[in-house]
Structure formats: structure tokens, C-alpha cells
Amino acid sequence: MLVLGAGSLGGLLAWLLRRAGAEVFLEDSNPSRVRYLVDLGLGWPAGDGLEEWDAALDTVGVEASLRRAVRAVVPGGRVVAVGLGALEAPLPLQELVLGERMVQGSYTFTPEDFVRATALTPEVPEDLVARYPLEAAPEVFRALLEGRIPTPKVVLEHGEV
Image 1 (cartoon, rainbow, N blue to C red):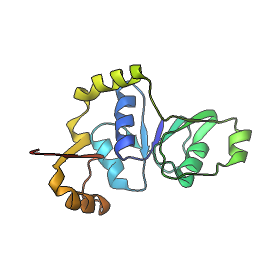
Image 2 (spheres, one colour):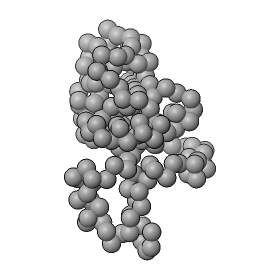
Image 3 (cartoon, rainbow, N blue to C red):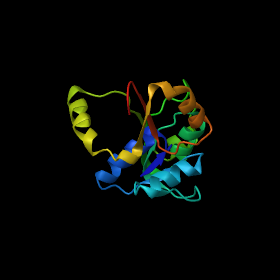
Image 4 (cartoon, one colour):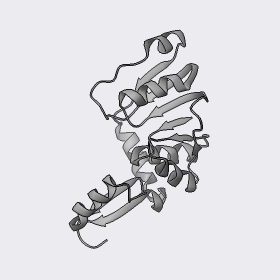
């Protein structure tokens, strides 16, 4: 399975997929984010872009990532769009129709899903989440923008961390 985007959502999905036994390949415009998740054992770099997968998860949600996802899956393959980086994103209809590829959105959860997800919280690897005090927010956001924080998910907490 291909996971497009190695940020917080991509990292958590890669962890869940690996936990379920899936073979995960990661792709992101920032190679250091992919390397971080690979070093955690959550997948492998996607490669040269010529491979095809049975399924692709787009955690980015922009035109380029959706196009990439559709083109990355085998004929009959499935693309699941979970990222909302843009309000609209055209799809490559020729590849979609002629390849009989499926595109599915995934946004919300049921109460049962929420219970299952919260039960997994203690198992999430600590290296997927960086915790900082709320007071450090301006510096943390600067560091995120500059790519100095490799951890996919940042949590700002009130009080001592």
C-alpha cells in the first residue's frame, strides 16, 4: 500500500497499517519525513514513482497528490482520500475510467470506531508524537515551518510537559 504524505496523519496511518500486517510504502515532498517514519519501521520509501500498488491513501488532499494516487494504483485499484489540503482537486479521468480505478473519501468515524481508536492510544509509539508546553507555541510553529521538528505529530499541552 502506498501512503502519500508522511505527516501526522500519514504517520499514524502507516503505523496502523503496519500493525495490521500491511506492506507500506511512503512518499512525501519532504524526504526527511519519509526517512523518519522508515527509521521507526513504519514502511519503506516509495521509490522512483514507477511502481504500482493495489491501494493508495492520500493524506495530503491536493491536486498533485490525488493525481499521483490515481496513477500509482494498478488497474482496478483503490484510492482513499483522507487529506483535505484543498477544497477542490481535479482527477485524471482517463486513468480513472480506463483503469477502472476507484476513489473513495474517508472523513468521519462511528462511535465504535472512536472507542477502538482511543483504546489504541497507549500503543502509539512515542516517537510519532512530540509534546511541547503551550507557551512554546510560537517557536514550535517556526520550527515546524522550517522543518526542524521531524516528529509527525506535535501536541501543545497546558502546564508542564
